[in-house]
Every structure is written in structure tokens, then in C-alpha cells.
Length: 285
Image 1: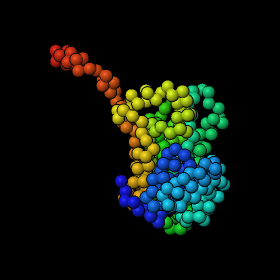
Image 2: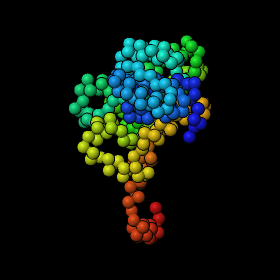
Image 3: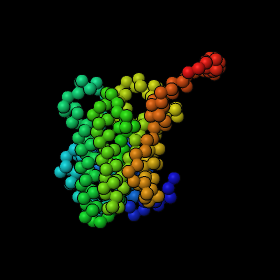
Image 4: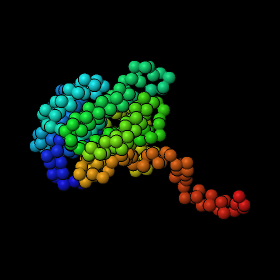
């Protein structure tokens, strides 16, 4: 979608960049010329991903260990980022955690485990890098990966829904406040993307995948590459006037579930013929 050198000379920092969506976005950015710095707790996985991607694209990919829940770890990772690659032009907050559970079974630690990664982790990374960029008088494109149920809420994933909604609010708020520093803040709300990490926790038996596909008008799950394509556009110079946007990318699942009469898609043509005649015969209000 973008010219092959769209990110030439640019530095991208991606949390959760070693696996899943983060790896896919790193691969896309590196293919387009970016020097990438990927961060997570597991340095071995990061090193493997960095070597794999850089060997394919020919562009540098650095691995930096970071526990986004810990402000000191984040500060150290940002210092290392600036040391090895310079101040970033692109920052993608992708690190996440989630699991399904009835809310009455949640402990305080379970709640904290998710909100610390998703909301606090995104805030720590964003604020730490943002302050460094302000000092350096440098703009940048920030992108957060949240979820469609950040908007609607959802049972059985209440910590994640709450934290992701907070991330949406964080990005919209900073888009208003820090736009004057040349920073942009946007959000992608992916629908159902089949990645190993997410599905092992969200659909451990595989029982829900068929149902998920049936309720999505496009008739399939999304792919990592599709999210990566949108992410690279939003972080590119071609999207310089896109700021404070929250973009749902879910094959129409959200609107399909939200519409009060959408279940009428199950009605056959013969049934519609019968109902139409009944409706035409109806008199008055």
C-alpha cells in the first residue's frame, strides 16, 4: 500500500513486538525501511524475532527487554532505545494481556495483572517517550492496539475491557493536548485476529471460533497482515492529518451484533414473501 521506502530513515518502537500482531507490524515497518526496536519481557523471543526480520528485510531490528508494568524498566528501555537507534518516529503500544473469566471469580491480583499491562503499561511507555520527545523538540506518531469491546464493554473480559477503554481515552486526550508538539495519537480496534497467544487464552477449546466467524459479515477472521497494513499507514507521513482517530477493523462484527434487526438476515426469500404480504395487509398504526 505504501512506497517501499516510506519509513526510510525512521525509527519505530513496538511493545510486544516479538510475537503475534507486534511481530507482524514490526515486519511490515522493517520491510518499508524502518529501523525497529522491539520490546517485551522475553529477551530470547525478541532476539529470535529481531534476527528473523532483519535477515529478511536487510534493516536493523534491535531487541530491548522491557516490563511495561514497571516504570523503572520502561525508563531503562526508553534510554536504551534512544542509545541504539535515536528518538523514535513511530511508537506502537501493542503489549497486552487477557483471559476469559466470570467476573465473580476475579481476584484483585487478576484484575491488576491485566490493567497493569494494558492501561498502566501503555501510559508508562507513552509518557516516558513523550517527555523525551518534547525535550528533543521532535514529533512522532503513536499508535495503540485496543479492541472493539473497548467501546461496547463485554462480560467475561471486564479487566481488559476497562483497561482498553482507558487506553482509547488516553490516546484521544493526548491527541488534543500534545498535537502542538507534533505528536499524533491514533488507535486501531481489531476484531477477531487468530494469533496463537490470544486464542490460547480466549478460546482454549476452539469451541467459539465457528460462532465468531458466523457473526462476522465478512465471513472470516482477520489477519495479522491486514492490521499491519493499517498500522503502517496510520504511522506514515501519508496520515499526518489523522490524529485522535479510533478505527474499528473487524469485518463488520460490531455493527452486526449492535443492529436490533440484524438477525433478520436468517429469514429466507420465501419467508420474506409471506411476511411482505402480511405487512401489506396491515391497516392503521
